[in-house]
Structures are given as structure tokens and as C-alpha cells.
Length: 403
Image 1 (cartoon, rainbow, N blue to C red):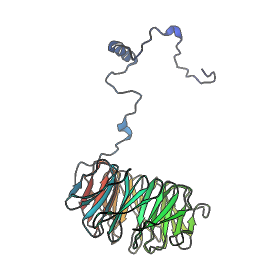
Image 2 (spheres, helix red, strand yellow):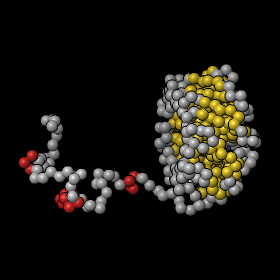
Image 3 (cartoon, one colour):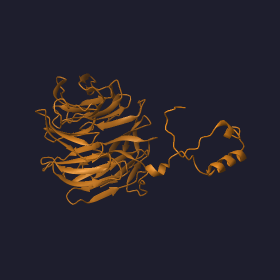
């Protein structure tokens, strides 16, 4: 025993002579164990008294038991991590923990094609602009690109490490992707020629093409953000705390582009957002949400330009991007997963770990909720006319909601 250890004055110390019987739990009879339990004041029917009651911490809310969906897809065997809607047709692609991706009909829930060949969870899916190609990406770094017309495998791409995201070019057939290794890759489709981009020192957690398609931005867990030239594979601008003390010091989780490709708004794991000017490489402003990690950011495409910010605590903040003035706050019961403005710039769509999809009217403050999932929602996607939302969930289902 450590002689310097502090002992409670009320503690009872036992010596060897105080022990009257030694009972081996593995060999003891039920009667002997009952006697010990009674002596200790423990009810035999109770669970382990050292275990915490999970109900005290988990389940501050219950998943809704109502169902507002008009169609279900239940083809996956396990959680469905990602979903995307075809830009022109009633076709959805979804990917899940079962290493599978499916093309299915959103009006009937019928499987159109099984996109097999992955050997790890499918975590990213997406159609190119015209819907001619669909890409499915798995956690092991493999991206498979398929023709949607005849559903043939067009090319197979590999980022040589865990895949964290990919993004189709807004016009041309190029894909950029970020890896856990800190590297970024670009491929042409269907050629599959690879261009390699290096500049981050940690996992490339997010990335997206500029709306103009001239550049793309990547954000990393080292707190840096880089604007890249796809033609020369060189850095146009690099944002980090060394270049401006106002920039992120924590992992960048998400960002979005201003529709004119001039400004990027990024959010990090500490709840901080930074507004940066992509063209001149300068930080415009740094603001705190006052919440935990910023999980989703979306910028409206209409005037005035509005910013929607979603946090891990479930808060949605609506802000004027030009004045930085907060306009409204909304709340989910759990963390926000994804946000998207509608084309008119009045409504924000959101999905959450609370198992609901919500539509928020930023003018009136009214909301409309959609339920049906029995577990966390992990992704959602809208059709082109934005009158339908398809969501995917930890419960293994995809649900279709009519707005």
C-alpha cells in the first residue's frame, strides 16, 4: 500500500483476522451468493450496481413513431450512409454498410440495379450533372463509376486510402475526392487518369468544386483550407492560422461556396465559422456559433445572400452573409447532419440525428416536420423541382417524402 495515500476518517479497515469465510463466485451455490447479496444490501434482481443507467444519458428524446413517407426502400442490410437523387428521373442511388449500392425507383421503391463490387461500406454516392454517370465510393478508397443507361462499369478509381468524400464537377465529367491520408485526387471520366494534390498534413475532411468549375477547395483536420487549380495541380490560396490568426485552429468539418464563387464559409469542430475571400486569399470574418461542432453549412443562391449553419447540438442559425447579422434560430432535438436552401432562398431543408427531416420557413419561422425513421438520419437529397426529399438512415431504410 502507498503510505502517502489519503484515507477517509470514516473508512473501516479490515485485517486478515476479520475475514471469516472466502467464497469463490464461480463455485458458490445460489444460497451462498444470496447471503452475500443480502449482507451487502444488493437486490438479486438488480443489474450490476456499478453499471450506469443508460437511460439517464442516452435517449433524451425518442424517435417518432409516426410515418409521413410516401415510399420506402428497404433493400439494404444495415445502415444506409448516403443517398442521391437523379437530376432528371425518378431514380435514386443509395449506399450502405452492407458494401452495396442500389439504383431504385423513387415512385415504387423497386430495385432497378444492384451496383456490386465494393468490399467495404459504401459511404459516398452521386450522379454527374446530366445523370449519365453515377459514382459509388466505399470507405476503402475505391470509387466505381457506372453508366446509368446500360448500368455498365465505366471505370474504377482508387485514392489508395480511406475515402472521406467525392464531388462531381458542376459541368464536366471530373471527380475530386479526399482521403484520410491528407491527399486529394482528381480523375477524368471515363478515362480514369489521375491527378494528385498534396498540401494538407492531416485527413482531407471536406471538399467541393466552385460553382464556376474553375477551382475547388479542400478543408482538412489540420485546420487548413486550400483553393486548388485543377489545371496545374497547384495551390492558388492556402488559409491557415499561420497566415491569419482568425482562421481555424481546429478540424474543418464542412463549408459551402457563395454562388458567384467568390467566398467560402467554413465551419470547424469547435463551433467556429470563418468567411474567406477565395480570390484574394483573405479572411473576411471569424464568428463563433456558441455551440459545439459546426456540422453543416449552406449558402442561399438568391439575394439577399443568407447563410444557414447547423451544429452538433441541433441548432440551425440563419444569418445575413453580408452583414453577419443573425436573423433566426431553429432547433432539432439532436445534431444537424445536412442543410440545403431551396432555390427561392426562403426555405431551408435539414435532416438530423433525431430521425426527422424538417423544412424551415426563414421568413415566418414556421416549420414542417417529416417523420418515419426509427434511428438517426445520415443523409438526404432533393429532386430537381425540390418537391421530394429522399432520406437515408441508420435504421437501414430510405424514405421518400413529398413536400
